[in-house]
Length: 204
Ligand code: ATP
Ligand code: MG
Image (tube, helix red, strand yellow):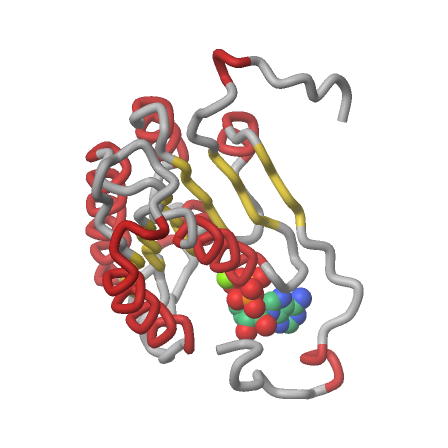
């Protein structure tokens, strides 16, 4: 990193982050950032594209954390707002399996992605959330179920302080270009390669 001297004019601003690459940790790193943001009194919305069939532990953690943050009231508030709503919300907006490949793509999956994107765009533009995570959205874009240009337009138009994290392999070059921080997870090894199945608490 060269010259990290802070510039007061740009010291506080919303960032676009992308967690991509073939290694494990894209979604869980986004959840970690969400956990960190929540502790600063920030309002966090996590929208999961394509997911829906599995019940992930983070769904129950989010509900418990959301209730606990409400209880904590304004004690955690490190934002500019006088009385923040302590929201920590996860919504699964898919159905967990996607048939892909041109004409084989199920129209129902495309409809779900379009509805998910409409909700995501509205949430980002509303300014009602400080951090919006678009989990697995890179897959929806990669499968040509959603146009990268449409996502880029909304990211460019978003209120200045809104942070957005996009996850999933093969991030689109247009979005990589637009993003502030891009991390590529590299697979060194994965238990799956030795035939070890997904483990509770680690994979779901
Ligand atoms: P996680 O949710 O664990 O952070 P991820 O978001 O990086 O994983 P995805 O591409 O969303 O990865 O895939 C989710 C599932 O696939 C998880 O169960 C994860 O363990 C598994 N997975 C991720 N990377 C690999 C890999 N390189 N080989 C096999 N399975 C993987
Ligand atoms: Mg993931």
